[in-house]
Image (cartoon, rainbow, N blue to C red; front, side):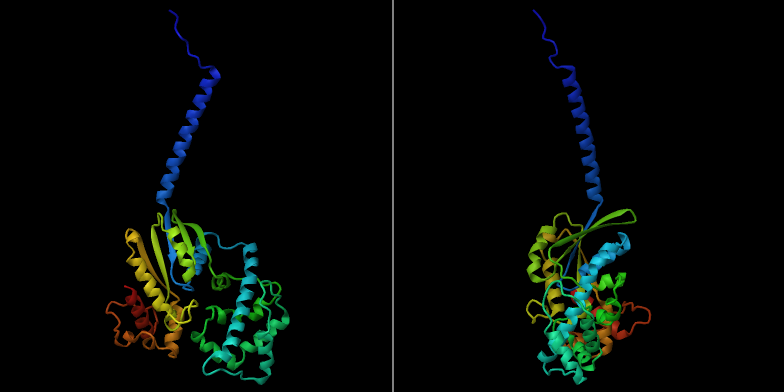
Length: 331
């Protein structure tokens, strides 16, 4: 009775061997990728609109990802110019809608207001020397400055003063944004943006998600395998209202949002880090004394600074009290 020999050819055996080796390499790479994945900290930035989440991402990029290259800086120039246009348009428009309204200090500037009011609302607006001249003169007007001082009564971007003070620099043909300009530049975040960086050989993936109410439905897409949520609060927003309804206090909106996240049973295994942002702006408001916290949060009148509070070097104790009050509202 004859024996059946090995029917596989030499080529087939070599092919199977190569396949086994390829599978081993794939398995090894998968294990390696899994280890890297487990060693990567995924940070999700959440918070109400205009709390400064995108600024934190930009700071991480400047500090840990070689910053922004020349081409990226060039692309940001248009956004910065748009910030100037939006700022002066918003202030000028508010002058007649505030109660009581605000008048220009110099009658000659009324024609400049008319010029700004009639600017076209187009994406690629041409920034002429005429525009800069009118914007510059208006920003120097005491009436316009008085309207700016009441910016908590209407919606104005945080970087308004910063860039209006820099009109002379920004309008130069050879202008290149500084890192501070890039940090201050305001662009509405819509969607989900990921930034990867490394600190002391530890990998981080940071996800920035829009904070406006209509953007929050996208948050659920980001919760999977998140190491920690960094909840960002604009400390200076105690006297402002949200853009969405021009009614709800911004700090109260942040408090409600934080409590919803904290009490969400699906997020109980995720660490939550509270990041109190814009404390420099908070200090300015407290020291100016025009918008008192107790007018918006009556409980502040009875608040006592904790015994273990640690003021910053040279910090006014009124600012320290305000900072700790806002912290304790969340905690």
